[in-house]
Image 1: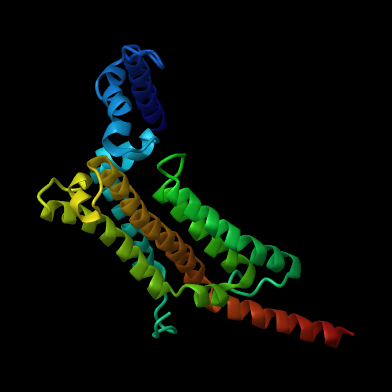
Image 2 (image 1 turned 60 degrees about the vertical axis):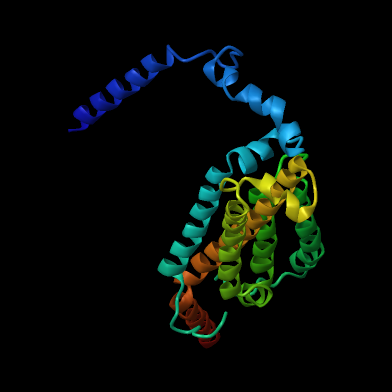
Amino acid sequence: MKTFILALIIIAGSMLIYGTQDMPNWGDPQSPASVHVSPYYIKRSIIDTETPNIVSSVLADYRGYDTMGETTVIFTAAIVCFLLLRRRDEDEGDR
Amino acid sequence: MLRSRYQDIIAQTIVRIMVPFVQIYALYVLAHGHYSPGGGFQGGVILAASLVLIFLVYGYENALERLKLATAGRLCSLGVLIYAGIGFLCLLLGGNFLDYSRLAPIFQVSLPRARSLGILGIETGVALAVMAAMYSIIMDIVNSDTGNGESHAAGHEIENGETSSDGK
């Protein structure tokens, strides 16, 4: 079983390494990610949102729906910790 | 053990001096997110760190006096509500969900300025939610397992004291 798992890992790993051969070079200005939406954000961010920090404008404006999901994830984590961990026997009051 | 008060005058004095500055810095990181690295998540975590500092040095009960866990839960919900509420406000004003430019008539500013203010608004909601969530999670984890163990440990210490005095 262990050798089977090891073989599985080696096969999956070599497939992943083989897949990286087709990826664009790191920092390649002609890569699809650099020619599709990035120039739009870089050009339009200050005009559209008056926000010099492009990261902020992308995070909270252009991709605001995604950030709302992240906030909901953190909220859910707090709720789950509350439901699983908080003891309710001794502190019935508002604490 | 973590619930008991950590008796150290040096740590307590340093924390009493540090906490206001930490909180001011958190608000700076939050409000300055438009111009420098930072924003709601980072500012909220630094705010939570100041509360955790109070908890670590002044003790569990003392931290609860500053911010009750029920209040923290409400703040966390309020943060998400601010975010989603701004989104739905834009929807009601005739735009897309989270399209802050529709808020311009309310603030009487230009469209880009309204989007900038919208970003600040949702970052505030994120900061509230993250601060309350981090604080609530840490306090819940600390309080989850120490109830009986603490009293056992205290009893054990007393036993040791008695045996040592008997030994003399």
